[in-house]
Image (cartoon, rainbow, N blue to C red; front, top):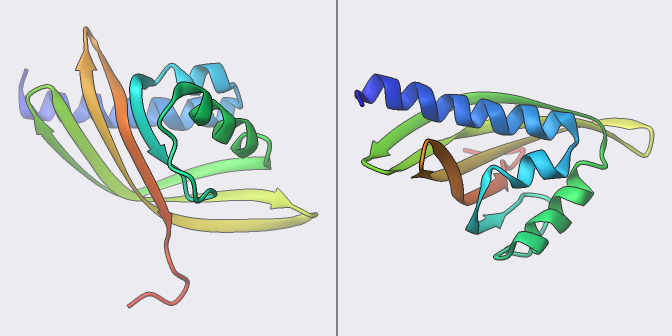
Length: 132
């Protein structure tokens, strides 16, 4: 497959993750992760190494009211059956009757399994408000 086609496929996989999050269906989200996935989300100080731990994180995350995601500044690299997509995303949500905005940096590592790109590693960090 050509690099441009692979890049488009990886970007589509990230869009699928965004849509699954916004659907608030934890089963849709977890299906995008490889069984051996490792995940470290920005709203937790616990690295998640099992499916049940990842589900636990998303049960909390998907419970945030009016959750929306904006994806910016992506960079894609493809190495045969592994792809990495890095960038920033913003989360808006309602917490305690107040609209919150969180800007985070992210890296997703995907591995192709059959015809699907599955997430094997996902790391997000909140971007400091006063970054240099």
